[in-house]
Image 1 (spheres, helix red, strand yellow):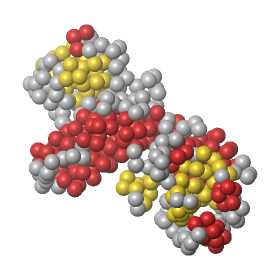
Image 2 (cartoon, rainbow, N blue to C red):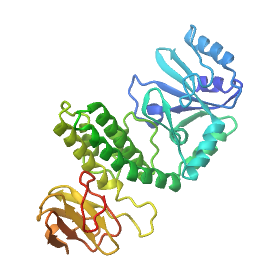
Image 3 (cartoon, rainbow, N blue to C red):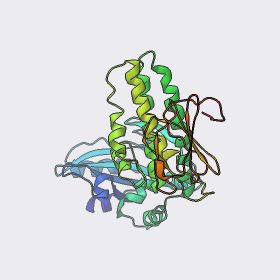
Image 4 (spheres, rainbow, N blue to C red):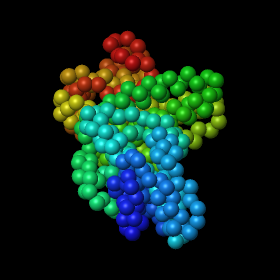
Length: 356
């Protein structure tokens, strides 16, 4: 608290927040103290350098704003009384602007060293929402934090909608790398797909996600997460070798993970809450939903595929399924499920009105 108060005496610093694991109460004994320095230019970095030297007893590199990149901005790494203390700059006017964009359903993703998925702009807002405010002489940070406790519905809808189209697209295009054993390209595609799903799952729950570290595990603990989401997602990155069949198996597993919740989230709310459909057993296939029926198309001849309907909670023979065996697919109907749900994007259905 003393350091925070002294920081707000520096010209340009508006307030100081404790962030990271220590603010959330998930820290280890050796975790850093991440101090967010919310400022308005010009920031008196010369005075910051003097304060850093006084606190550490030696010379400390304190950057100018932007010294660490467009999104991380800048700051300093200190060791104070044996504890690692990070100063991290945040331009407060930029945070306000991003908050306004979030409320309109807009966000951007910036390239930044140390962030392989990229920095999502709404992370700036999440930092304020989840922070512990240490010094805020004007009360501006507390006012902003109170606003950001409510996750904006337009941002939620935007992140979910983006995952709905890009995840299947990314996984579909990644299959072009199988024949050549391009594990590098496929691994990158898997990472991106999982990252998009993590963002969408947090958005669905109205929870802020700040970066990639621990994000998969956190997503797996959210209410709408599929069973064993974290373990299954992490398992995608243990592909043995570059054989096409091994790469195909990893993509099949990703296909099976993603659509079980991403396509069932309907943020528009036109027909009430989303109604998920779970594949209990049988081969992965394709589901098309209309206003009155759900059709399950198996990619091979699987007349006994078991499905559990999220509309009524019943499965297989307990449900009013209409089943028709076709030349290359099994067709199943449920009266509970409106609109469209994809179980797997790994198979491109043919005729009979089944779009890919």
